[in-house]
Length: 264
Image 1 (cartoon, rainbow, N blue to C red):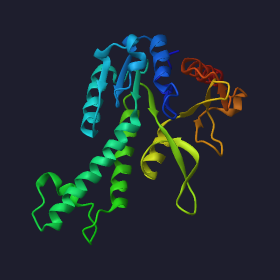
Image 2: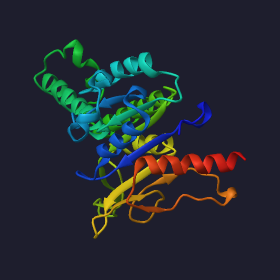
Image 3: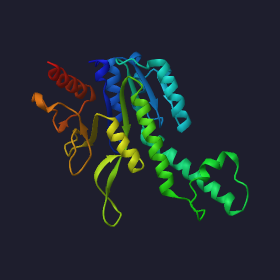
Image 4: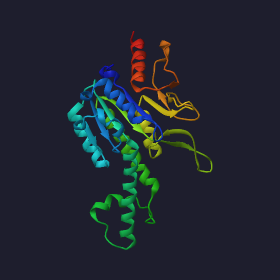
């Protein structure tokens, strides 16, 4: 079950509300043992698995500074241990909070400038995102968000453990009328941040319910949704593009079986 250091898993699950993302993390915890897990909870959403969670190994995060502190704590607990698991639950909430805080600070800086008052020191950075007409520059803010998210994903990837993030989903396509359309993808603000996430995770799975109530896992991209599976197609053992009655533990075992076959 536990991969070698060169084969630690980097995985993301995404779905709309109520699609058992956190329950999937619970299955993994039961399988590997809570002593081998650190949870970074970004939205206080562990209620569905609270009976199996050791809260001394839960790091609650509510803002960007909290996420930086969480990385230090996680490093102290499990850093560099490839048989451990870091589970970041509710990541979309953290990312949206970061975007909103940047816009709020920039708007506050705008208010000072509009009143021809000196901008306080704590808003100097935000004032950089005012354009030459002293209007809030959304593109500049999203550029900053993209850089921040790129560093975030790269940093957690370097932790040296197995890594699972959960996200909400959203439509990621744009029509020529600037309206949202397919495919669905992880709800990650900004194009740069989105691309950084999709390049960080070797496995990205979308979860949804079928008409018969089965939980489905989409492991490969279609016109309807984004997904990712990094595998060696030369060995003839492929991960199915859609898995009915998706179970995270069984999926990880399938990945490891494919990797073992590739190594022979």
